[in-house]
Image (tube, rainbow, N blue to C red):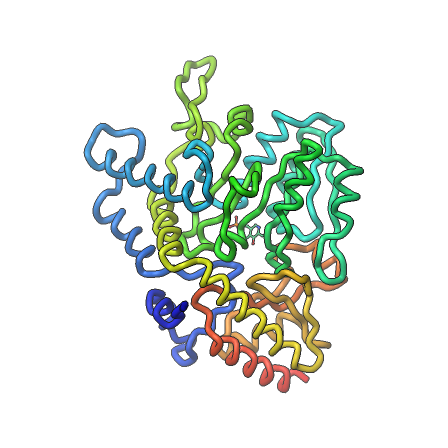
Length: 405
Ligand SMILES: *Cc1c(COP(=O)(O)O)cnc(C)c1O
């Protein structure tokens, strides 16, 4: 059985009192997760005991930092079941990973007549990089749309008729909570030689990821949404694709040899890791993933799914609440609006009672446009969220609605 109280004691921030008064009810986990002691300590450990630049020095500390840094790559590879460490590129986060692929993949693989397909439920970081690449390289962009429940519609028809060269889509929508059937979509895309990038920013903490089983071409995520530090993320890419792809950032580390005329680039994965990496954060990420694995991820997932069902029911019991995103398969977040009440007013009142939720467009304006709204209120859960958190949230929501109505 999953013991949420035992888990909670490992997160120091959960002891925080909001405005010295209210216990923290943190329901903004889709924006970022809190960090357990073991992750915080791994960063302190690095800076107090072995801070040095990696892959450079002959000295002892540099050797140690390099060893830990490369062990972290091992941990990430194992966590997502990739074949080789060459397929694990450390970036600053999901955003940088997608920008890298949008630039380098498109430059190498696409012509003017090709199409990149996205979906209407993407985070801005899975839209804007492709628009920039389109403007640079001149391919076409198209979108899969979603229905009133927040499920992708006409997927097969659209993909088979447009025949994109690459489809980039989220595993879990950060706004609607929809879990896309990526396995089926990847198989369909591969049947027409279309590559697939999966934005795993929301799924890395809430699903078991096996890139080998999925046969996905690219899988990207941010550390900070999976109990790890900010400033680090991952690009997984299939080796034979990464090898062909043009470079992205230039600088130290990504080179084999530089003359004043030209550069011979380094091998994978270093070819895509220009400059000094965020070593402490990479080690923090590996610590977080090892920690998560040691906690029985499947038990956490089942617990979270149950909690999401409970929160959904409680919300549905309140008059005048509209939930955006009613897909059959959902995970970890609920977007909603209260009739006649601005999302920001509600969020502000909840905050005054110590309940942290997210308000606004959640970096997914096309989703808001689909529903002709400006924004929503969103609650999102993590492994340390409790039934009590949900009850306090619902209580506070009822109080806030009374004040606002
Ligand atoms: C958070 C998020 C991103 C962006 O992640 P960053 O850490 O800001 O780079 C992209 N896609 C989804 C689905 C997200 O939830």
